[in-house]
Length: 488
Image (cartoon, rainbow, N blue to C red; front, side):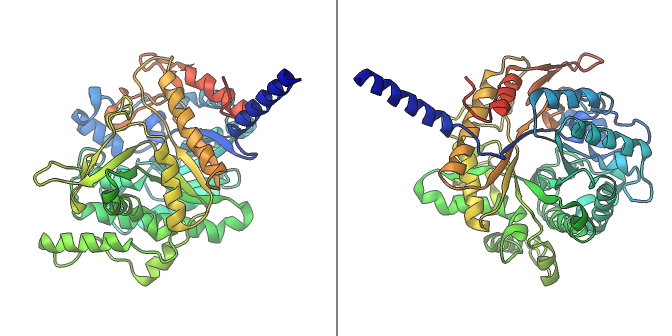
């Protein structure tokens, strides 16, 4: 009798442990890509040049191995295989982006490319035929060069240009696409561009350009959201937001908590507060810091452009969920005098520097260190600051070198997904989905083809750009099938 009870108890404990690894009903799994990183066909048909086309051709020395995205994964021609891969994995949704200059070669709505329309219609219809929901990003760092020549994201007129582009996209695809991201990672193409000058469009202007871009992006997002709300929502009932790149900032010591919070407001709040907070506008601490910094440097007023009352109301509340792009974390401490810092090492504006714990494993990408708890902490912080809402993790992934036996990527997925489950089950977070970055190896910006994030390996030496599933693809497929992390 005792042994029977012991066996029964062990069985119940195991059952409970397995249940703890199950995802709630309705939780969805997807994978993501971006137009410039996978499509290729850079000058196919009537597609016009975008900022990355120009940048990699004019300044190839900024890209590892002098690589470019001219062909990339050649998804422009091999889209059927991409859909097959999504189906093989059993994805609930596939996130991809539309190339603005492929759809609107002039950048403006006066000319719509028939070939561009056909391409995206084929992708959307092909996904739906396989029962896969398309999640579409309007802008993923590939501004038409014609608009960049007019000032790009630093020109306030881009708010209307983006609105016109969004209306074209909604008019042609909103009948089938129900979940949208307006703009992906403005931190990357505002701060990551103007603060360095080493990414497209290759302009260095950290004191003014970064913040002009920051404000115009928020207004452009809101413009697209308001257009959808007014002209398309009643008929199609879709959901929209923008996607933010969120690095979690942990205090180096308990005494550094206030400093870490300032870093969060500067790096996350600048692209979130105006949209998600109840009061709107810039985070007050950020306004104060940049105003003081501007005065110190001799500017007559803050280089962070102010919002009018009308603009605050226009942007505030333009979301249906929060899109979380998260990969890594940093420890935050006060910088010592004379310490060299840039945005990857710290924040000169607030005298902050970053470190990592010695036991945080580094991925192939120099910036990516593994700290799974950072994802859960980040979403908890967002809920605390902006209230309870739906969250979707729209990017999360691990870079490696070549090879298909990617056990480290599998471990990364497991540990970060465990944190999502803990957030759902212990913290009551409303996390509705998870998106693996990325479906296949691709052009990884300045890293070229050296950093591989894909579930599928791509042979970039082959004209067919042969795609082969990695071990992580099999893991992800089982995870989706079982709706559980219990896949061993």
